[in-house]
Length: 111
Image 1: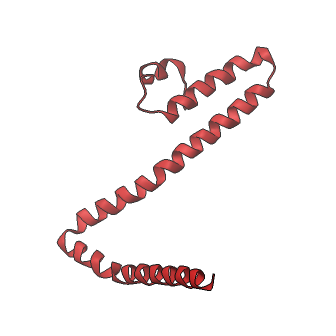
Image 2: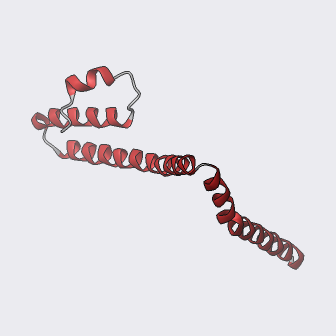
Image 3: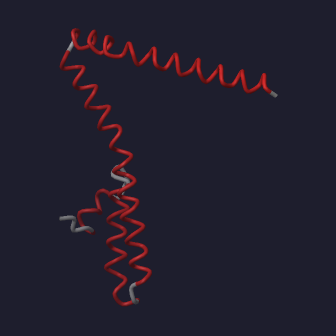
């Protein structure tokens, strides 16, 4: 039992060591890339940031959809129709490359 724990601890320490080794060499690598092309380095960095924010935008749109569905479920029947149109607009925002792009402008007043 103790040998298994010792092996696991050893693997974890080895992983931490290698991770720290990579992190310690990161500034030098970025410096070399910067010397090669500063504009390309900035572009790649910008794309990395945008790529990290896109999933957050999707999560926020899903939150809006859920909030609107809950609100529509709590709304009496005669007032529910405008809420449902709002849900359709939000689902279009969640899928910007869907086939419904042509109808979005007709159906949604996003302002």
